Length: 158
Image (cartoon, one colour):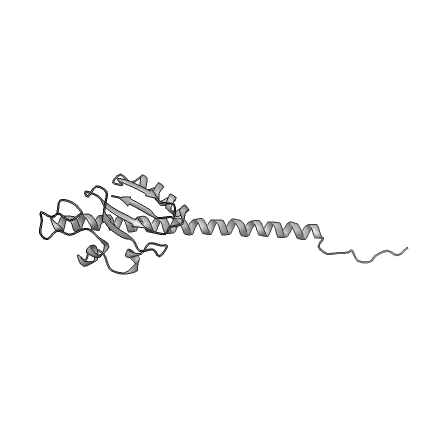
């Protein structure tokens, strides 16, 4: 009988499949981590935009010397709050960093259902982002009411 001088070396099919499964698991976990981080970053940016727009709206209201955010027919020079009114008053810049949400939708500013509050609407959010934003804004004391619409539109009154 012949004895083999060399041991047979190589990778078995089982070892190869196990290695590929581990690599796929690592890639899947990495993708999930980065997608969640990206979503949380965009929601944080939207929160700061809402905060800035709320502050600018109340500064605008004080400068207008109006009792609320909607037009008052008894005051001749009264205006309705809008994104354009905030830009015209130089309270926010007209660039896309403020006027567009992180998902490239145009943010709308309008009087709330109660004219004492300003309504801020962010259209076309992914539903996960909308729910995350709504949950995080519920912890803010000055948030009056808010909600998500089925197509991913967020709106809140502050």
